[in-house]
Each structure stands twice: as C-alpha cells, then as structure tokens.
Amino acid sequence: MAGNLSRRDFLVRSGQAAVGVGLGLAAPRSAPGGAALGASERIVMGLIGCGGRGQAVLGNHMRHPEVAVAAVCDPDEARMKQAAGKIKKQLGKEPQQIKDYRKLLEIKEIDAVVVGTPDHWHALTTVDACNAGKDVYVEKPIGHNIAEGRAMANAARRNKRVVQVGTQQRSEGPFFKAVTAIKDGRIGKISEILINFHGNELPNGLGNPPDEDPPPGVDYDLWLGPAPKRPFNKNRFHYQWRWFFDYASGKIGDWGIHHIDIVHWAMDPTTGYEIAPITASCTGGKWILPDNRDTPDTQEAIFQYPAIGKNPPFIMTISVRFCNARAGGDGNYGINFYGSKGTIYVDRGRLEVWGEKGNKIELEDVKAGGDHARNFLDCIKNRKNPISDIEIGHRSTTVPHLGNIAMRVGRTIHWDAENEKILGDPEASRFLSRTYRPPWIFPSY
Image 1 (cartoon, rainbow, N blue to C red):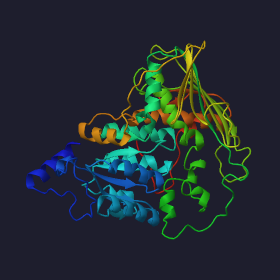
Image 2 (image 1 turned 90 degrees about the vertical axis):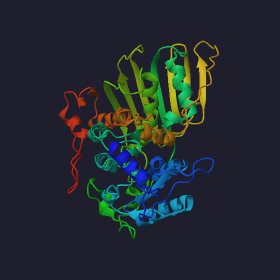
Image 3 (image 1 turned 30 degrees about the horizontal axis):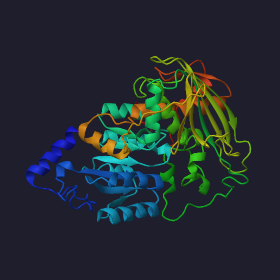
Image 4 (image 1 turned 180 degrees about the vertical axis):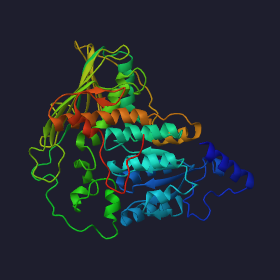
C-alpha cells in the first residue's frame, strides 16, 4: 500500500482533491454529516466481471461513502454497459468501460478491484491485480483448481495485498453465533458434520440448447480465456457455466465452499488458516438430469479431518442432489454439527439447537461483523488481513476440488495439506492443475 499512500499524500499536498480527473470517475458521496471526503480517504475501485454477482458485490461497496468507481470490465458489452449505468445512477458519473481487464489494471488511480468473473478467470485476474499493486475482493470459489488457489495466495503475500474472498457468511449473524457456540464447547465434542444442498430440477434441468454463434457484442474468445476452446452454447455462458468442469466445480464448489468455510472457522482453533482434510472419498455423477451439464446431479462426498487443537478427529459429509428436494426435516441447504452434548443446524435464515438428552441449550446473543464489504474497506486502510483472507479461502476452496477429484478417479485420495500434494496417486494428481489455452499462461507460484 506504500505506493498508493505516497501518491495520495502527493495529491493532498498539491491540492488535487479530485482523484481520477479526466477518467470519468464515478465519485464517492459525502461522508456522514455532509463533510467532503479528502483524496487520501477515498478508495477508488474497478469491477472485473459485470454479471449479476459482480454488480451486487460492487454495489455493497458503493454503499460506503469513501468508495469511488473508475472503470468496469467485461467481454460482454451489454453487461458492461448495464453495470456502468447503475454506477452512474448511484454515484453520479459513469465509469470507463474496458473490455480487457489488463487495461483496467493499468489505471493508477484504482486502489482495489472486485473480481466477479466466472471461476476459471479468478486466478489470472487476482494474481495480475496483486502484481499491479491493487487490493482484491474475489468471489468464491477462488480458483478453478487447487494450484490456482496457491498461486493467488502467494501473489497476495508476495505483493503485500489485501485479498478478501466472497465467503460472506463469516459476516452474517446466524453463522457467527453458531461458530461462537461451537468454539465455546456448548454442544461438546463434534464427531460428524453434514452439509446438504438439495433441490429438484426435473424434468429438463438446463435443457439441451444447440451450439450457436455468440451474442452480438460478446468477445467469446476472451470470455473463454485460459479454458479449452469450445463452441458457444448458452448453457456454458452466463450463470450456467457453474455446471461445467471447464469453468467451475459444480454445486459442491459453487455453494459448498460457503458452508465448508463455516466448518473450518468453527473447527479450527484459529480462524481457518490451519485446518484441512487428510482423506477425501466421493461418489456420484450425472445420472438423472437429461441436460448438457457435465458436473454431478447426485453427489456424496466424505472428508476425514485429523484432530486439531482440542478438537478430536471428525467426518464432514457433503450431500448434493438436483433431483429430490426433501431434506429430512431440515432446510434444503445448511450445516448440521453433531456434538456429544447437542446438535446445531444453521443456514442463512435459521439457527436451531437440540440438546442430546432433551435438555435445552441456550445460545448467547453475539454480534457478527455484519458487513463483508466494510471489513474489506477497513483492511485496505489498516492493512490487516480481512475476515475471509485469501489463505483461508484457499483452504476452503481446496475441499470441494478434492471431492471432485476423488469422484473422477473413483477412489479415496490422501491429502498432504502441508505440501498440497495427493499422496501416491499420479492420476488424481493431474487434476490439481491444468494447462492453459494459449496465449494465456498459468500464473507462477
């Protein structure tokens, strides 16, 4: 951050109060009480990936008065225009629209970027942003594969960047309250944890649309980036890319990482920097839905964790199904923590506790941080690690990748977390990374 601070000090001393003059910079609002924000207090942001999630995350940051927006970036001109229009409506000025993220990163006024791209773009954009001296808020799961996640975490540390992962449940009340209770021993020693994601997309799922030309204004080759060359198909494009291994990791990664991250937070004596499974077993596949996705519609993954701190070893199971929505009395997504004294169920709208012997367990009211974007902005200023630091996000993202690898090779795999290697299994190990499509080059460690 030293480079940015020096530049800001220069702007303040020279009286250039308007950061980004000539850039079409969407300026921040006044601070509470109407006081004008000085240049040194402003945080100028850029958006890489203008889909619904990217726009929503940037919108959460724009609620804070110190945030200005200099530029937005997307290979889809329509989405880029839509994002720029929303920013203009909220902040009064329209940001630059830039198709290639590398040009956005050249804008010196930008302090931080939001990465809301498909998963297969997270690593390159984040590493390049860190190398360019920008702080990063990157959506989850952090990478397409485990090696990408390590490259991202290393780039953040090497460049002394703040990198927040979009696992925002760490800033939400029910999860904070549940984690606090578990760490305090309220439900005893936990031997098993169940995460479930259940729904029903029959009879057609995504359907089977034909391949076709990309929509006008879309640079499809740039959208593919390092991913394999494929004909354009709308099911592989906006939002639905989540269900194809070329770009993502299916439901176990897209949704699973949120709840895995809470498990790591609850079971790690620190905050999730140290915890990791030692084995992963998984079965399932694309068995029922007649659509063209290639990630599973039915999947059960079991992970064994070693003892850590005062916690004994435990098993974590992740259950995914797209063809039956019944959840056995619990919500159709959420986490069950099974302890020796009781059970906690938690999701985004519900927190329930049952005593093991019918006794009532009361949980004290605790307050969460409450604002994931606020935490990121504060850390940009104070240079502390955010609540969902990139190293924590890497640990959480690793787990669904291991589950998918175990499913694809059809056997239990053994994980060496310290060296980030699969032990004794060359076939499984090849899924830890992938070769990028030229001219894109895998980010170095």
